[in-house]
Image 1 (cartoon, rainbow, N blue to C red):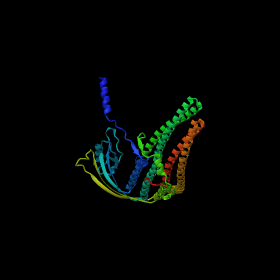
Image 2 (cartoon, helix red, strand yellow; image 1 turned 90 degrees about the vertical axis):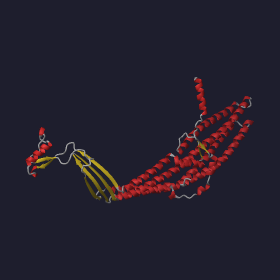
Image 3 (cartoon, rainbow, N blue to C red; image 1 turned 135 degrees about the horizontal axis):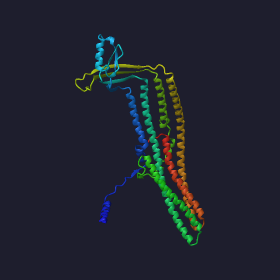
Image 4 (tube, rainbow, N blue to C red; image 1 turned 135 degrees about the vertical axis):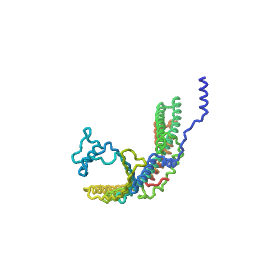
Length: 468
């Protein structure tokens, strides 16, 4: 019976289609577009813009009408007694006796009032006061500066997002390229292993026939062992490269990816010598605009400190009502309420702060001067950065062209040494040197392709070329 149930379970399990994880297919441009929307830093930058908009509105509302309601309820656990001069009453003794009898001040050893005074408790034991107040700011210099600062803060957040997007593009290009490099390297290493294994097998047979020395076999075994280690390491690096790309994209690091672009194709797309003659627009560069905006923010801080010496004017109007009772009858229809209203204007004039405002203004001016220094420094750095990026991009193209030629030469040399080795005209050491040289040139060739792609992305960032 148990065997039957197990068989039925297996049958149904095989019959149910298994949900397969969806593979994300991406070209490099697709990867950039995807990361702009989903990258973690970009999401945070977008949230910062939303927060800046809310902060701008928060600052704006300071100058708009403010309405506040207030309800106070009071209950005297023991009412406070006030002493009134007895001489104010015509019949002193009668009044004192009446008050004492009413409040019970003298029985049971209760203290008696001083001679010539009558103890009285004013008001009821319970009271409620409800009011609504409208406040309106009429003039405040710091408020006007605050509005300008809020706009500047919003611009800072928008510029931070733009810079984050440019950094994301460069990060995705590098991560995408590293995956392709790992795959290309693994492909080359597997082919090298196939050729080397074949050479080792043939050399082993020659040795068994006594036509070569055992040293030649051992030399090839050493080379093959090193090659297998490189293959295993490259496989691990490929897995890490995919995870790094997923991280740059803003997806789960174990998300399955399929890259549609090839390393060779990207090199062709990214080889653009006209980019070297691209004019550098300093004032449009994001870093320059950020530095300029920082200078503007410091200017506003100086204005803010100066505005604190100006008077501020505000007005308010208040309406309320209160009720009193010895018992809680405030919700009864017979309860009597007494309303009131008040209109007021408040003028605050700063007169003397012991030079505190002067010190704060001086500090703000120093920060403004520092921002001007940073702006000049940014100008010099950006010009130098652009020149260096152009130089490195041109060098990457030249290195790629040289690596392509060197790879072809290394392949011919290795092939000649292999022929000579099997003809007995060269040693296994010479063949090993030729093979290692080939492997080095292969690695250099692959890295030169990645450099072309990466250096172009770096140059586009330096030139502040917008994301397509």
